[in-house]
Image 1 (cartoon, rainbow, N blue to C red):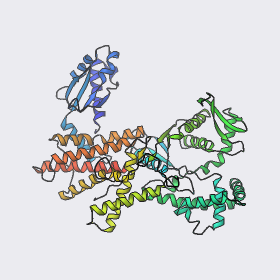
Image 2: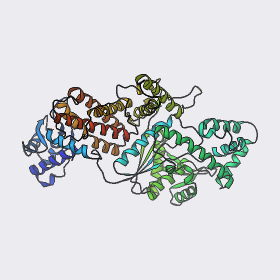
Image 3: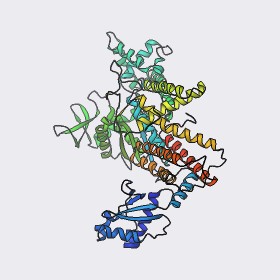
Length: 579
């Protein structure tokens, strides 16, 4: 057992059962971290406050009854204090904390629990084919990938879904432009290097006088009808697109692969049936020539239901139709326990309308669809990052800017390293800075893209945490120790504080798996790093007073590095060996 909250919950429940009868054994003792500004205790139990009315006694009397059942020689708790109207302040035995830290050191999972198994589908990144990924794709890609890593670490089966925008009327224009420039031309290769340039050139032709627009519209019809040649050209464009997005993912260290692609086109054959079924069930009706779903729970300013259009008046299908087929597939075919949509916040109403309609059709069974809402990335002026022409800044530009700035920082700080070593560290630090800046704030709020702040080696930044891991590695390498397994013995307050914070790792990872909020893990890692700094300043490691203390502190260092490296990995951030 390495989770203090679980251990305390069990112990206080035992005391409740002894005090008030076995029927109270399952009562929640409401264990929380203690308020360090008010007490030196480790945790607080609010059970007496919560249960007083049900037990029929004053809260302080309930608290006293619980405290009386915890003996002075308890194996877990060293001190119990009743505070205020009936709070229980609980201090853990230091030898229990040490034993738990030793167990964590030996545990390959580092205390990460294995909750009830789930199948979790995560829809994230989802760029548009033949278009450059822009700043708006950064957060969905980084947050989604961190959630996938974390949920897998908890033992869940994670199914990544990259819902690529790979279908629609624009492809008629793109295919015709590809034919004009030649499939193997340099212009065609822009789809891999500068997709926006290819798209803009096609758009320019489409908007110009001439028959290009007519041919493009005809090409849409032949593509959607299953024409083999049109389909071959579409596949060609998609091949270029995959090469482009995979290069971006490789730069960012994103775990999405071609096997995770599940674009809009994969649902094409189901769209007519989706509409027919909803109409047959009376869920969808024709309104002004379009097939719509009207739901009383979604009303506009006129207090009338907002239409969810699933087939346009011209017979075409839109996002709603595809999204209905998507949630049906994820629930009925993939049997998802949770289906996560890591998508911009403005899509919330759309998703809720789609999921409600799908639920009415019986297409959401045993699945909880969840919108992990994504906020914006803004510049130092507080506005969404755009180019001078008004376009959203490309994701590759942001990545390249971070890597360039990181290279300058590493060149200044480590001129002693080879060019190859500096390049490796600069890539790790630059990408780590981008990801941590994103993941250290709540995913539904915006944050400022400020490279100078993001790349600082001090403060709550990715490079600070990476430096902490490299620093500990340096300490351990200078120890010349064959084994770093302690045992951990806690005699100083800073040793105990570090060990206790290390034990929080598993519960924090579990919390991220439940709340889907990676910033909680980022905050924990930063706090752990600062706690380690205090420990290292006050507790000599390599120059400890005797061998046993030295071995214990080296083990604490080793455990701290393991937790930091694993935690950063769950955020998708590499830990350099040196900085």
